[in-house]
Amino acid sequence: MIVYNYTIYIKYIAFAVITISLPFIALIVLKLFQKFSAGKVKSLVCLNGKTAIVTGATSAVGFQTALHLASRGCRVILADKKEPAKAKAKIIEVTNNTNIETKLLDFTSLQSVRKFAEEIKREEDRLDILINNAEVGSRGNKHTDDGLHSTMQVNYFGPFLLTHLLADLLKKSAPSRIIFVSSALAFCSNLSLENLNLPPGQALSLFRQILLYANSKAAVVIAANGFADKLKDHGVTSNSLHPGLINTKGFRRSVRIDGIRTIYRLLRFAFLFVYGKTPEQGAQTAIHLALSNQLKETSGKHFWDCTVFPQPPVTWNKKFCDDIWKSSEQLVDLKDEEKL
Image (tube, helix red, strand yellow):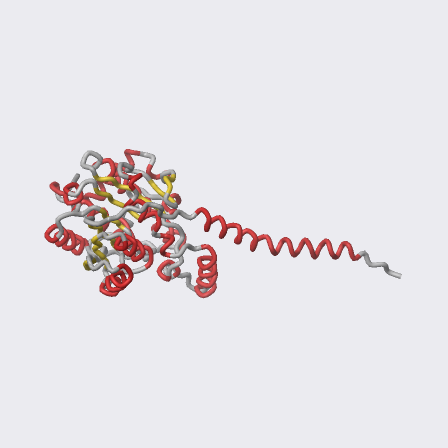
């Protein structure tokens, strides 16, 4: 007669249950940590009489940033390649602030950037806050008519040129602030002078596409630090930030994998749904940098969740950063009188 030892069955069943449960417990802990560590604007500053430009302002973090600035009485210029009329109407409806303007700005065209800057300098008396928020995910190895890689041009070269062109207006309006939206992926870049503008014709794997996006965001931090250094005697501050992982359609569609596209997107959607921030939560650090009285003289810093965070390693070598800056001046065809 066989005697069964049910204790051993219970032990292995318990072990299996615990093993299966651990990933879900980890996700719950991660979600709770994200929720309670997320930065939140505490400043009550009023922005009456101030003017701000927010690029990429028609959706997600850019829209929420513009909305919150407008709610404090700021004159906000919504700049986007898509017609910003709907965003303007929504902001006015929510805030009752009618001092909202819209401008078309397409970072895939340096001519569009120059046209936008000329309009701003001609029509605006002051510029207190410039928020370089517009971005795209990886676009593969595509180049614009300016001969620049499209991902790098939208995320980095375009804002780099725009900030140069508006520098005099920012100095005239001092104290003023420049804010660059970067990404945590800046810490994973392999940015170099050789791949600052990736040559056409090279096939890009998923990994290299992610690196390309990371490089554009690392260059953004270098730019923010460069403007901080060059404008420090003019009352203009410049800082960069990581907004967090944002649950937006744009992010979910930024990279596609042939063959397993559906599974990949489902998994990514699930992760973003559980862990990603809302656009309003993602906008908190940019808003904090735009208005906090405690940051009046803070410049050349990198922020996560409204708190100063260590700089990406790529920014530690000053000579390298200077070389990236000079190469960027050439690639966007800066004139001598436009250089800082």
